[in-house]
Amino acid sequence: MDNKILILGTSSFGGSSLARFLLDKKISVIGTYHKKKNILYQQQKLSKYKNLYKEYKINLITDFLKLKKIIKKNKPTHIIDFASICMVAESWDKPDHYFRVNCSSKAELLNYLNKKNFLKKYIYISTPEVFGSNNFSVKEDYNIFKPSTPYAITKLSAESLIKSYSQTHKFSYNICRFSNFYGIGQPNYRLIPKLIISIFNKKKFPLHGGGNSERNFIDTKDFSNGVYQVIKKGKKNKIYHFSSNEIFKINKVVKIICHELKVSYKNIIIKQKDRPGKDKKYYLNSQKTQKELNWSSKVKFKKNIKKIISYYLLNKKKLSKYKIEY
Image 1: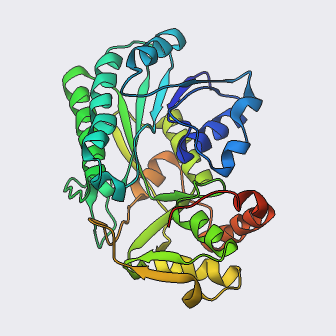
Image 2: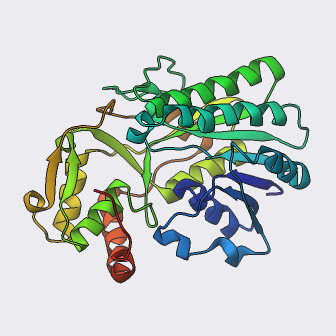
Image 3: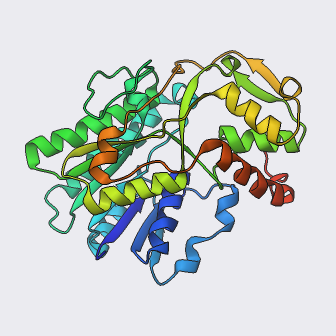
């Protein structure tokens, strides 16, 4: 695969997971990050791939000239864009900042990338939250959007801007919407690692809204392979959905992990009111994507959770040092 990949946001869980996936396939990767996060996967440094990997520290708002120079110098064939602020509830606290990072910076970037002959494709990583809550599986061509948080609105705005550049300037893109992806090395403030570390530290786990919202989960191996297939054979200006057929209520996920760690569900959780604008259910339909890309989600949630818990048990001492906000 004779391509040079620029990943915007390699300090994110998804961005770093994809970087490792591609580097293991001996594909040249350039990465940008804003801030190194205090999470376990940072111990598995990407520097071991030093002959294939380069990375640069970039703030999308203040360092755009630096980013332009990086792109001009390296001439990537593909840009995979993870570079967004993705904390849903917190987007209500600083909506203006979310719009600057998730929208304004994209407008500046797309304007620069437009008509760059070396760029084969811009791949934008998006979210099912652009649809809001739905009781049915949402297909790739579904176009009724009901974003319910500033974060979701910024992601939808970026999608719309990308499509506009394609319609007006023949800009080549793919948009990839993913179910909740998880796995070893996920940031410690996310559901699964936060719960495991709470149990390790004998802390009560806050269960917002009683954990009744439903989510579809996909492991990072399946996630990274999905993006890889889009790089290889994604059709121009197509939207792809990546999901498994496994849907769980959040309280069910908590019960599964409590069972594996032999702790009482009732003793570990503390119910709290739901977060503002939280959607009740996300469910992407990925049948068209599966057929077109010959892709499917292969990792089963319950079996994978056992492996993840085993990994965290092996790293229990390291994890106990991390502070988690409750």
